[in-house]
Length: 153
Image 1 (cartoon, one colour):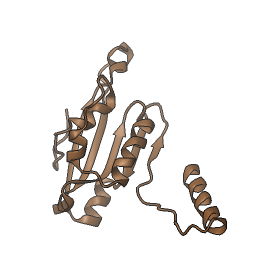
Image 2: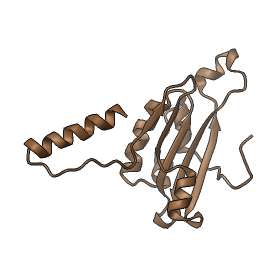
Image 3: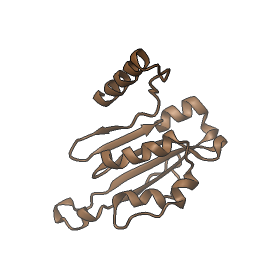
Image 4: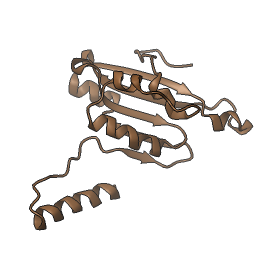
């Protein structure tokens, strides 16, 4: 990722010429794929969280949502976006992964990467007031738990 290389270079320059000791933190780097249906991610995938933390510590919230701009477009038909938040139960439902598939996912995941880096919990997301009508507001009202063998309609 170009932004990762730029940040690593800046930090290296500060260490070499500015007396800094700060190293690049490669964990929880937000990533977006700018396909017609954008995908954004930060933190652990569901599978990685289970491998690193253990299944008993991982809870996954998820939901589908229909963005307003899709409601107004007859060509979108029954399309839905998808969002997922992965939390660590042993850390008070600390958010360890966020995934979004939908419009402007790159923009949305950038903001949520701050939440992951800062160690926010699911309760912090729940306490936010969503901006209506936006696709991202679903992060503030997400209550559906993902369980094995059960998916969303």
